[in-house]
Length: 120
Image 1 (cartoon, rainbow, N blue to C red):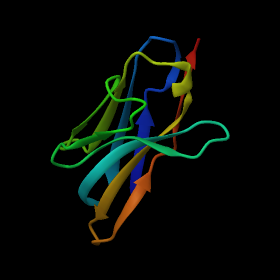
Image 2: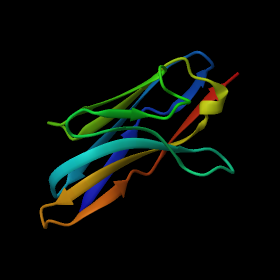
Image 3: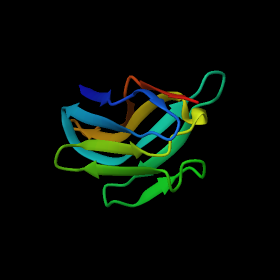
């Protein structure tokens, strides 16, 4: 069984910063790409940022230059540093990881989501 536990969401004023964390635990053999998605009310879930096990990063255009994704492979943890937050960044943020279990089952896994609210 695999778990993704997120933390770090909350309420912040526009221009402020938050740091999200997502720790993967359980019967894991390998963690490949990890990423953050978000879903605002009445909108589709969208990719915010992703990072491969080798450290290659991808960002959505709307967050490039403001958000930074990083990971600690030893801890199976991914982070999202969010700076210069805007009201339009308000959403539920979900962690995603491409996980191979000790039983050699590979599948994407999701966290439970953490709310980020940016007030104007």
